[in-house]
Length: 274
Picture: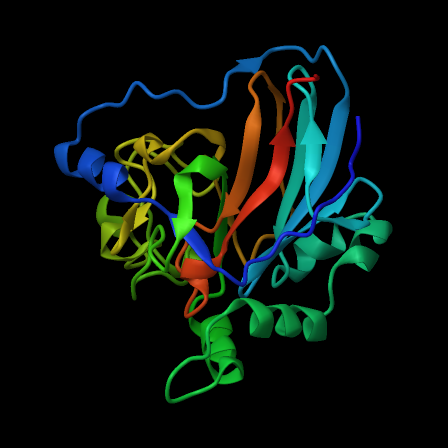
């Protein structure tokens, strides 16, 4: 099995097709479209990776901390991912030293933003970046099949109401809770979850102006995970895949100007072994 990388570009920014998802949210009807089928025990290899989020993109490191464009698996392999927000200093410090050394520095991340994002009108990326880090410091990550992605700036939670979560914001229907408006804008995350155990994809999942997170939007290899700036430990996701396809990273929490462009196809590829 090879981890050979093919360059991934976000210059032609991509975002989720939300039409079917919005329809599912409007009706509240359940969907029968499954997430990737999982097995209880691995038949193959364990593939390890680390995914970091920043304003505005993701980076993927292999088990040794080297940056790669994608991870390649076969059905029956176990995928184990450690997920973190670069602004979560305690969580970053908890990573192995080799992984910390592989994190792209601030200058490199800024260079990638210039290459990937359209020039804003009436201001500049640096100003918007500083504003986003102050007002919208959190991110979210879902792993969704590439067929659900298209060109355009319409994505999940695309609107003014994202930002702080957990102690800084609410959780529940409509994004309202003890702390005030929560993630995803007025649409907010669906009820029935908590920051540590968010709802999986479905008609009442992640949402907000301009997007609604639902399984109708496509196959999910992994449901949304919150990547908080105040997390003290990284998030862990591990499962055995029993499907094939190419899957991308999607930010599910509004995080400012570049949020609609935080969609990166082809990051996890599950081949058929042929």
